[in-house]
Image 1: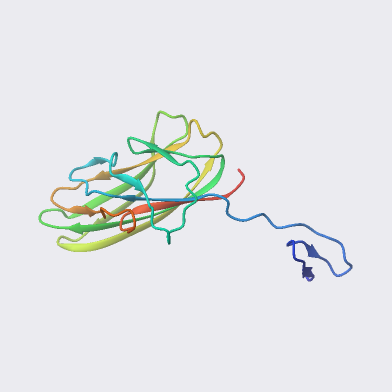
Image 2: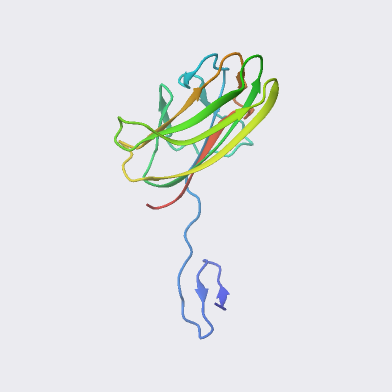
Length: 174
């Protein structure tokens, strides 16, 4: 389609008719990181903190966590991008990191799973997930770490450094 986009973002067609205005863009973003290294298999519960570095993106629009369960601040389609930094050592031949999601505030299912391996090595794991949040009271997520013996999921004690954690971005309406 040919045309001219004006200062408000509306596109005018060849004969001058307005054919639509693009969406307003990203309105909600938040960033969380692990602040202590978990030392066993299980849900990542108390290690989380909102990133506070002035240079990091984050509007802090009410994302909340209760024992590692994250609630969405509004309905819509949300993108979760995570990065985890691991060091495998000793007898560990693999480690799993899983994103668990509930749509009824009760039963969690594995939404995404990543497995890393190779003893005595460093790994960076990145995943992306889209979630259609239709009910902020019932749709939640949390992270589960499994198959970890003597390895380490590396965190950073400073809220200004983002070593292992995630970013959530509201992409638009549901």
